[in-house]
Amino acid sequence: MDELLDKKYIDYRQKVRKFADNIAKPYAIVQDEKEEFSVELGLKMGEAGLFGITLPKKYGGQELDFLSYIIAVEELARVDSAPAATIAAHNSLGINPIYSFGTEEQKLKYLPGLCTGKKLWAFGLTETNAGSDAKGVETTAEIKDNQWVINGQKTFITNSCSSMASGITLQAITGINDGKKELSAILIERSTPGYSTSQIKGKLMWRAVDNGKINLENCIVPESNILGNRGDGMKIMLSTLDGGRLSIAAMGLGLAQGAFEMAADYAQKRKQFGKPLTDFQSITFKLAEMATKIELARNTLYHTCRLKQLGLPYGKQAAMSKLYCSEVASEVANESLQIHGAFGFLRENHIERFYRDQRLLSIGEGTSEILKMVISRYVI
Ligand SMILES: Cc1cc2nc3c(=O)[nH]c(=O)nc-3n(C[C@H](O)[C@H](O)[C@H](O)COP(=O)(O)OP(=O)(O)OC[C@H]3O[C@@H](n4cnc5c(N)ncnc54)[C@H](O)[C@@H]3O)c2cc1C
Image (cartoon, rainbow, N blue to C red; front, side):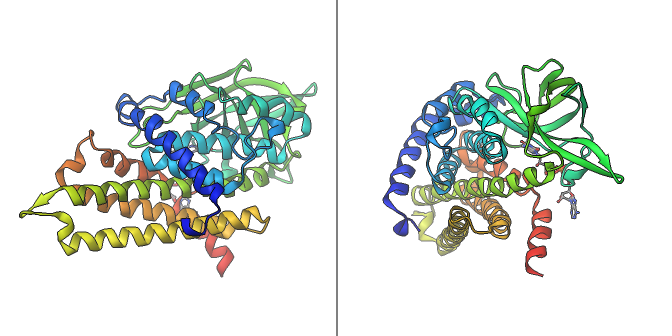
């Protein structure tokens, strides 16, 4: 696929790969073991221009296109899912809805700060009783004296608790019309009184990603903090997830690429029965199958990015890309671990973490079951 890419993408890939290999990778095993988000690495990613990748320079962004952003996520995930998840959640779930649906005033107020590389912004759909069923939210926002009074809680929110986390775009019930919930998207800064956070610990995977709960107790924000129109919450959240799905697909592709490279390297070095593992056809066939799946995953994902860049509909392909890339990540990580034998189980070998980290990809931002429902609506 790289043979057909413009030079600008190849150069950008090399730039991010250098950052990933030299700067991000040394944090991977340490932070995973500590189960702690690294603010130090977060700030370095900001300095490297990874916040606001696609935003116009006017708002402090890098003004690169969507495929460049996807390549950045892919390259980070090739070494570690944690920095990839931080960047993906900030760019596509944090910044993107404000840029796509905000007023000029909101864009100028929030976006330059979110591109400085020092602040992160979160996206809050999920609640204890609202996962796949996004309409199940119970958080409420009531208008009183031209201000929203917000009460509720959000959970599993990425980029919500560290010292870099600065606020959230969340979905809340802003009224009931004909017995139906009116759902709206509202911007809330973390400094708002009544806004509190708590870290979620004890995860199987993404242990160095900042995931937490946000409690909102009589949080008051101006009426103008509504994003888009009142009642447009679902539209805003779901269209944000279309782009978000491509980020998760890029994480799957990058993770699979990294897992494949580790397997190919190990198979050439490891000797059994007096020969390297690559002398056994059952091992080389595994590597051939892994490489084929990665190639197909990359073709699907990049094709979808091009549709998005051309302004063409891409919802079906986004769901397919996320479903397929997360499956490929799972299969490739599993086979890579198999090739590593017992050494693959040890924390000191990155494949152990890759094997755990891939598990999130078929659940976060739309489970595989929900994606199949979405795809079937397009194709039947
Ligand atoms: C590490 C991490 C980070 C996250 N970050 C964020 C974030 O930043 N912001 C945010 O809002 N959310 C976030 N989430 C939440 C995530 O998007 C949800 O976990 C996801 O949407 C699924 O919801 P659930 O976990 O409640 O599962 P559920 O919806 O309870 O689903 C449980 C199981 O039932 C299946 N199921 C549910 N409904 C159906 C159906 N109709 N038909 C068939 N099967 C069905 C599902 O596929 C799944 O297998 C994050 C989650 C994790 C783990």
